[in-house]
Image (cartoon, rainbow, N blue to C red; front, side, top):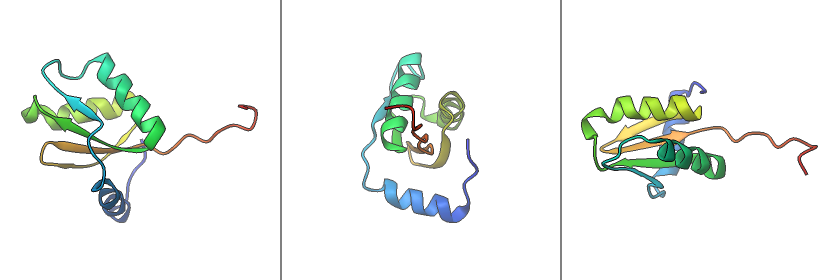
Length: 96
């Protein structure tokens, strides 16, 4: 996880406004499948939204759990939507 400055958070939040949630937390909660989907989405997009339909009271704890498992950083929680960011991994020269 990286430490975001307030200006970085503001910029990432502005970029996230146009995004739709790509992962939805429902009755099953945070499962291995959810963690995998978040990881895939972060790999592809770097900045994503996660929507909580259930477990709204535990969204902070669950978001922390997701961030820990995927090495992501929480940008902000707005309502029942968490904005997550992970720096893109550098592609190695010998990965062709």
